Length: 375
Length: 204
Ligand SMILES: [Zn+2]
Image (cartoon, rainbow over all chains, first blue to last red; front, side, top):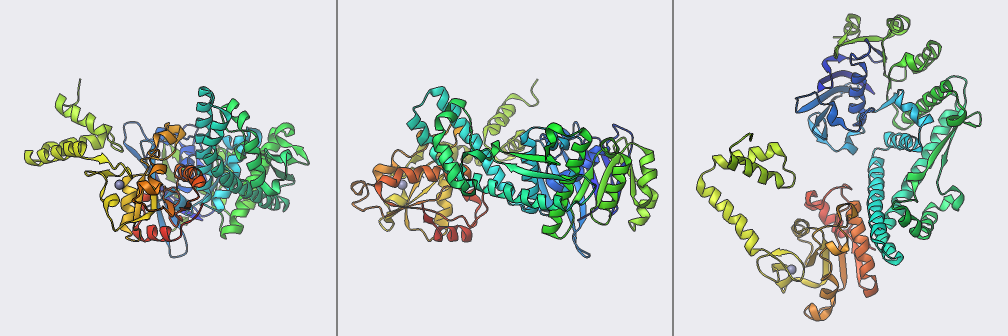
């Protein structure tokens, strides 16, 4: 995948337009100038989501009705697509070559994997972060899965509302079972799909991790179903059906859904030890990096091309030795975008890179870049 | 201070109550109205009044109609042994456009959604079981119920609820197949797709 041009209007403080190099792109500028905002633009064009906020409306420049992001991608030698994201109020619209697409269809166009400080929550944060990590990995190689996760969380929210209401009104167990039945039946089928997909993606990530793609650390992951010690996970559908029937009372007392993959987790181990509890922060960074590289590899296995790789504030997260190894590994694989505030970084790694300077939101490709991009 | 003189501001406020109309569209509509000739506006106002005065729910199928029973329920050529359940009157129109369904309808006027406070009691479902009895159906026994609620989680829950409700009656209960984008509204589905979905309905 190749992003050849990038443009933004009324998005945070950024403005201007740039061409992008096919290998390493270094966004260079002092802190607070808008480097990360540009990275965020790429991420939104690729995934329809920001890696910073769920309220995209806050990213529209003050006093402007809408923000516009435009990216040109090279699909094949002869085919280029223009991707557009329009953020207006709380809504966002995505189009390809001027034609509006559903998010599900749009998601196949471009993909990006991100490595930043927030993403470290996958390794050291709450289970929710790890579930999202897995769901994102699945969606990347199978976009219709986005509908499955949307349906699942909708069913859980409807169920929660019903349970809360039942608790407040002190409904009888029989009544509540009856009201829950239509939602639980759907939950069983969608939850089974989520469970199957996550188990499968963990298998694939593990086989990519086992190849020891990069560095010396060996990590492994294991999907931790919340029903693990409750019965036979191989017959997940029967198991969850049974648990749902058994736990109606408990769910009503709790006032929310207790059974299902929204309670699951992912175990990440380094040399057999849980990295969340026992890993140093350097090991946690390495683990996340390895997970993201595994993601990139399975994306390649599935699609025959590499996603974009975005690394925010790269030298704050990794030392130069690691960065050197990483960039060498990525070279010839991904189109990579990194942000840094250090001139020394550009001196060290910039020889084969496209350097873009970001000042006061404005992006300026360095002269050599413009030439190498053939403009 | 108001941005506009009071009558204009009030009109904008009224438009803003309509579903899917934000402040900007409301302004646009208000100024459109202001520019139209008075006769046109009178006709518009009259149609609003008439719809409120003359349109009632069909006592059999809950369709919106100016005669009760509605044109479908009163039509002797319709097959009374088969009933198609839909969420909204515009879903009926979508099914009707296929011209492949000749039975009767039942309109729920919504779908189950605990979040929006819609439970079975909020749907127009109470008159469903009674109408299926032969004595309330021109002596005809109902052979099949097709559930054509939307392919959303709410629509599925509603279908599931109805299937459970009908189970004791032993009547054949089918769900239309979804050869259409999941998560969408029946309203936006083209006729070819709708026709296919009807043909591929399955047992529940
Ligand atoms: Zn009728």
